[in-house]
Image (cartoon, rainbow, N blue to C red; front, side, top):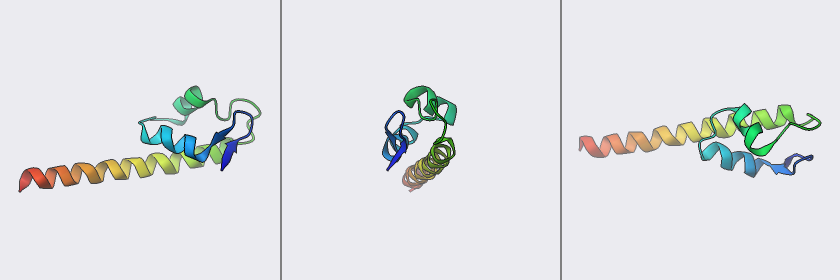
Length: 73
């Protein structure tokens, strides 16, 4: 789904940035320019980024827990 019409940024673009380690919404704006033109998409873009960043953090913790379990065995 397109989130930012001005810069043609989709939810997949935002998810990709979050998974690659983008750590803040401000960094996302610097990288993709999302929400920097008319501003109509700011709420949806921020919500999408927050959800994707949280999912990436949870996935990262899961990988760390698996690695710790393997080392403990």
